[in-house]
Length: 163
Ligand code: FES
Image (tube, helix red, strand yellow):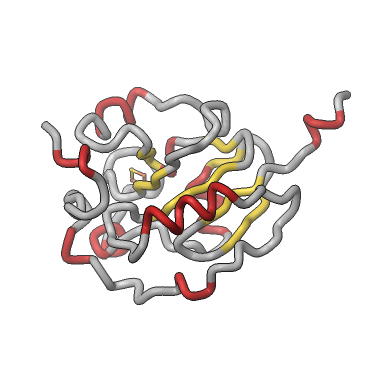
């Protein structure tokens, strides 16, 4: 067995300021829930589909990720995300294969988003669960909720509003 296949992927949750280790092939939503990472905005907290790909509330942005970091988009994602940025996924549909950087609730504003994402992507991902040191990112979880689950904050992405 080759040594690289034993590596545990690390998910860098940018908004939460955490690096989390998981097993290859683990479901991104399940890892997030296990680690206490909040995937859902208000609508998803009030009611979500439990990971069936039907409620479209478990958005994540994986901009800059290795194309092989997760399993390809499912047919559900192809349909449900057709009006969203191409880097968005549904966490419940994605299996993690390699380390990657994830922005949860991308529809919710994040001050200085581009610079923070650039720093997160620029820092090497560790081979273990080391902290992604951005404690100032512990923003008010309700901040920016006005954009709504199904709406895209106009400040987040230029291409988000299409269609
Ligand atoms: S949890 Fe409902 S679509 Fe992912």
